[in-house]
Amino acid sequence: MTALAGLMGGALLLLGLGPFTPWLLGMLGRNAVRLPLAFRLAARHMADEPARTAPGVATTMSATAVATAVMIITVAVTAQARADYQPEARLGALVVEGFSTDQSATVRAALQHELSGAPIAQNNRQRESGFLNVETPDSYTGMEAHIGDQALLRYLTGDPSTPYDEGTAVVVTADGEEADSARIRYTFSGTDHSPSTKTIPATTVRPTDPRVGGVFIPANVVQDLGFHLESEQLIIDPSLHRTSAIEQERLDRRLGQTAVTYLERGFQAPTGWLYFVAVVALIILALAGALATIRSVGSRGILLRVSGGSAATLRFFIACRAAFSAACGTAMGASAGCVIGLLLVWPMTTSIDWDPPPRAPFEIPWTPIVALVAGLPVLAAAIAALASPRWLIRSNLSSRPAPSTLSAPSEL
Image 1 (cartoon, helix red, strand yellow):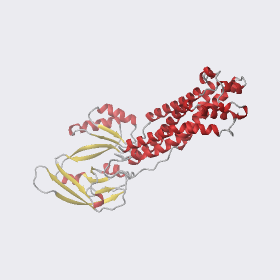
Image 2 (cartoon, one colour):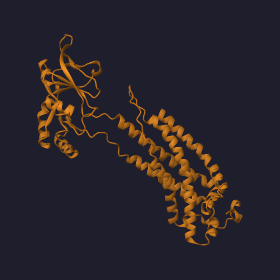
Image 3 (cartoon, rainbow, N blue to C red):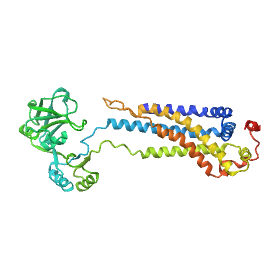
Image 4 (cartoon, rainbow, N blue to C red):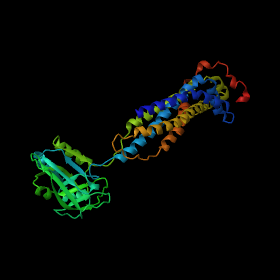
């Protein structure tokens, strides 16, 4: 609903600028004395027939405004998505999961075949149904437990020199807190006993990636409690082997539906081809509006007289008219688009989570906006200069008397 309200507000802003266009053209026509002759003619010709020229300028303005707003919103949404991204593994790690117990050996064999020589770390889970939870000091309560051997610990910390003790838990966190013990609460299904507890010593280690952490529990500690372990994840440590996308594809083909693979590549910004196509379509629409404005102005006789019969001079005047029309639309449209885009950034990046993440700062894409405002008039002028004058100025107005604003030669 907030996004819809923002869109409605943007539409009202554009509708408010629509009636403003004829007034702006009239003001430019009345104050065009200091402009060069070619632009003076363009300004006054467009001001003489606002009912014909204003729709084309308004079209250019609206298309430019929407394109500008889309560029701003795209940058803001991408920045927020990058800030909210939570990796599921260490950067470059390959994780294979989602397989059953009886398929564990098959999955491991496929992994060893496709990534020959790559060490495999195994993250385990208890086979028996029941409850097992690891608690550390209050600041670490609720952290994910990882059950395995020394290979899994080295993967979690990213440091091969991390000391490993079969009776000691390791809290992997970047928060700077220190934990000297870990309490394991567990129970088995089918028993009426309250959960049992076991406390073991613990150390704290900072990981190489601050967003990846958890509590490492040696496998033999859990087995001593009476649990049997089974493989939950098979992991390729990126410190020992950097898995490529091609290797992942080969492994996916070999595993089929047996397991699911995940290769942590970090945040991948969307390609944005849809936004690109939308912006290009809006630019084409803006150009069409500028060229339609040229066609709407009935001043063929004046242009022919001023050009002195020179085809090159006539094309130059037509190009200046196209540039002036596009400049009027893009200047107003870019200003409106910046306002609309900044208003829509907040609803477009709002989180619905219970604990919403902080807003990510972003930079307004001034470079493409300035390129749009400066390049569109140049592009419109180039198209008008290369197109046939017979197509851009209406021949049925060649005998029409000149408008009153240009009847006196001194006004030119």
